[in-house]
Amino acid sequence: MPDLSINFAGIKAPNPFWLASAPPTNSGYQVMKAFDAGWGGAVWKTLGVPVVNVSSRYGGVNYRDKRLVGFNNIELISDRPLADNLREIEEVKKRFPNHAVIASLMVQSRQEWHDIVRQSQDAGADGFELNFGCPHGMCERGMGSAVGQEPKVLQMIVEWVMEVATKPVIVKLTPNISDITEPALAARRAGANAISLINTIQSIVGVDLDRFAPYPVVDGKGTNGGYCGPAVKPIALNMVKNCAQHPGIKLPISGIGGIENWRDAVEHILLGASSVQVCTAAMHFGFGIIREMAAGLTQYMTDKGFQTIDDMVGRALPNVLHWEDLNMKYKVTANIHAEKCIGCQLCYTACEDGAHQAIRLNAGTRVPEIIEENCVGCNLCSLVCPVEECITMERTDDGTQRLTWKERTAAGTIPTEFNDERAGGRHHWVPAPAAALGKERHKTLPGKARLISGETQVPVTGE
Ligand SMILES: Cc1cc2nc3c(=O)[nH]c(=O)nc-3n(C[C@H](O)[C@H](O)[C@H](O)COP(=O)(O)O)c2cc1C
Ligand code: SF4
Ligand code: SF4
Image 1 (cartoon, rainbow, N blue to C red):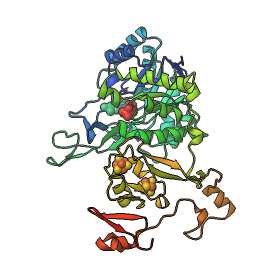
Image 2: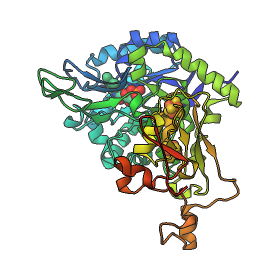
Image 3: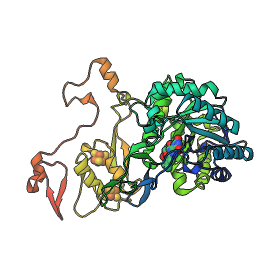
Image 4: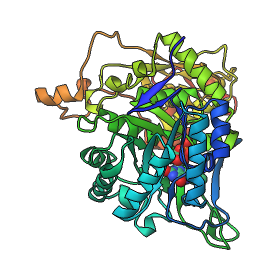
């Protein structure tokens, strides 16, 4: 049985699943309920200066039949009295001494930072997360992402915190910056114990077409908010990877962004996170999702032979290269499994209009056919095909050759003409422009036969 427990920068937890600082960690009631359900830790809803929230606060991106693919908020930090929050942190720690309770903090002056760190320490928090990420409301007051976007200011504030902190300090980074490693390096220089990322992405999720205002609408007006949920996972994964691969950072990473199930969590871990945090999924589906997450992670670790979380951390990093280091001699070709095909022909449309005209339709069957010599192996058809494993990408090079762009550059053999065989990529024929129009079409298209319209099969000239 694998061991899910972690020691994250000195903060111990029974498993790597923490609730991110957000509404699910707004109160002791919620955090205790979450721990009872199986969560390993909680980063308390950010404590700091008094704020007032607006109503409404959230916007969502629904995509086709899926609700909240993306989630957006214009909420600020905790609007509950600091004393109440601190008292409840203390109570939670008493009842759950082995779970991680982290105080998320955001204040302004050096004195305020010192005070709130000391107060949270006294309340029994296991560590601190400095919120330098909030992209709305607080940044206008010189806090949140206004700090996260200025590495020098971030470094100064972390140094203030380190002056008094006796518990581990995690710096939470904003993704609203061109190079996430810069604030991460500043956190390292200041002596932080860990980083967490990402906070929300500055966004407008939509516009009310009748009220002419962005969502969420507050008395006929709106503002940019912070984007999160499944839609942001790819951005978060890339940023986690950037920080994990940077040789100058070398800090434990708490991965946040779009984590909804055990697979999402494992992806963050394989790219370098040693704990993960969840917000939107807990808001959407409740604390019960932890059961599937913990069971799925346990099963995955068992299948792969991982004993501890540390065994998995960063396991994918050696395989994340720069483009110039990829093998240009590796080739894949699309393969349609006719027995699975439902004849929707989405693959044909996608390849014909959006890719490389490498799929043909044949009369008498709804099952399209790959024109192998024109398939560049881009994957598009397999991505649009609605049937699992109906289009597979098969390796078609013999595996004996390897050549990268970097090697060609070093050897001084970068291509000087477009038909350079060694240039990499697969060459494909391109129909003449006029072939797009009606009857002209068949004249220039190669292949055995091509269905032009209806049931008419047009033989191709020159075959
Ligand atoms: C409604 C809402 C409120 C949030 N409040 C905070 C906060 O007070 N402090 C903080 O550090 N992050 C806050 N966040 C950001 C989350 O902690 C997290 O970084 C972000 O939502 C990405 O994770 P997710 O994709 O799992 O939602 C908030 C997010 C949401 C949706
Ligand atoms: S998209 Fe898939 S199911 Fe649809 S026609 Fe193409 S191969 Fe068949
Ligand atoms: S992999 Fe790309 S080029 Fe090949 S058939 Fe599919 S869409 Fe066309």
